[in-house]
Length: 71
Image (cartoon, rainbow, N blue to C red):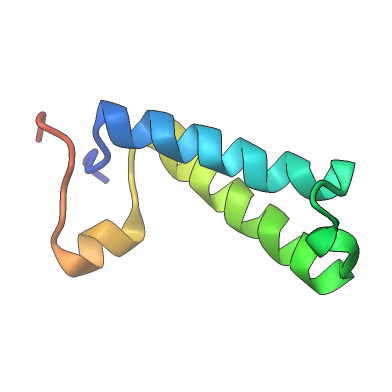
């Protein structure tokens, strides 16, 4: 598993992931009052945070994309 997520990509993924994970818990905006949307948002947020932490995105590997300058 070589890194394929660059620094700017990691920062954006971590911020967006945390927002998607925390927003349903605060119910802001009210769109997350649906349990399915709330759990879906939290799952996507968790995946984004995990890919930022591990610097590896399986989807990038499948597509052949890399934002990491170090390979």
